[in-house]
Length: 206
Ligand SMILES: C[S@@+](CC[C@H](N)C(=O)[O-])C[C@H]1O[C@@H](n2cnc3c(N)ncnc32)[C@H](O)[C@@H]1O
Image (tube, rainbow, N blue to C red):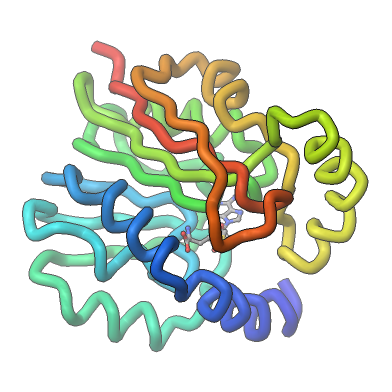
């Protein structure tokens, strides 16, 4: 990945995402998680402090290994086991229908083939299990979306593969998943280019 993406970017991410709004959004999203959970793109483990004690085991995949000591320290404080695999979300090494919850936060912007990764989510989710997502993406405001398109090549470089302009709900639909609940909102503490949010739930098919 290179020195910038492996060492500088994760520290930048920790700094940018340290604010109260990020913490609240993570906490609220994860409050209902329980049982066996899979997180896509765990990054530096910023969700770890927000998982409730109703989680029994947490599995995570990430194509990179970012700040491993930080992740280890955060994992050590949890009352359930955390197992992290360096792997891509597009090719999950898990059997079908085994997770109660799958979680993705600020990750579908970056995964190179998000539709394939979302198809994998549908495969590993138990019938009735939940996929919780909290992602930034394409604005409904045409002027903002036009700027997202213009600045996307720069964001791709400074955000290590991050895209500003993905329509997250459409990607989920393209993967054959059905969104049962979707909130669209704009974060207050982030410029609109990166703060147009998609938060919601998909229920695993029977
Ligand atoms: C912007 S970071 C978000 C990290 C974390 N989800 C969070 O909420 O703080 C995006 C993460 O997705 C990971 N990623 C990118 N492509 C991936 C892939 N194909 N499979 C799994 N993880 C991937 C990156 O390595 C990075 O850790």
